[in-house]
Structures are given as structure tokens and as C-alpha cells.
Length: 157
Image (cartoon, rainbow, N blue to C red; front, side, top):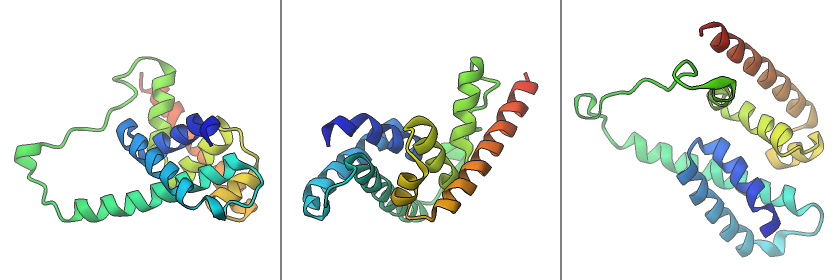
């Protein structure tokens, strides 16, 4: 499973939108993979591991949402910073990164698995526990939203 560490971290980073959180998710994913390795029955180890990473992220996100729901927000003390925009960053790469991060998680995960990890639709469907048609539909919508977002950000410059 170590040869797939970069792919696992890449997926976790894009899903969690935070490098430190991604490191925690990957570490927990590898522990889960080790603990449940007897459930692996051969096949593509990369897809199996990315499924574990995705499921670990979903569990992590639920845990984070519950903990955030219990913490009152003191707006005067903490202030609410505006989300970073591509106009503040340099280059189209930053605009693209911001647009990817702005995608809803269900669109972002299929886009990352397809475009960055270059997985076929069938493997993405297995990882995300979705029908292949749904993967294709989400990927199409993700690409359209991404294109619209980048076009708006570039035009705003």
C-alpha cells in the first residue's frame, strides 16, 4: 500500500481542503487498511486504498461537523474572514485551485479521482459506491461548474 501514499494524500487533501487534516485522514486510513486487510480480496490495491481514504474522510467530516455544532461562534472575538479569492492570488493555477475547492464534495471527489488520479469510471464508481452513470454525470457537472468558475474569475481580473 505504500506505493499509493501520494494518491491517498492527494485525494484526502482535496476532500478535506487542508493539508494537516489530510495527513490525519491518510494516517487513519492506513491504520484502518492494516486493521481490515483481511477484507481485501485481491484486485486493484490502489482503488481499495482510495475507497478506505474516502470512507475515512466521510467519517472524519461527520465527526468534525458534530464537534463544530457544539462550539458557539463568538464573531467579535474570532471575526469572519472572507474566503480567499483568485483575484488575490497569482496566476490561473491559483484560480483553478480555488474553483476546485469551491466545488461540492460529491463533485470534487469524482473530479480529483478522474483528472488527477486518472482512474477509470468503473474504479471511481467502486470507490464512491455509485453507479457508473452517476459518476459520469457528476464528472460532467463538476467540469461545467469548474469551467464557469474559472471563466468568471479570469474575467474579474
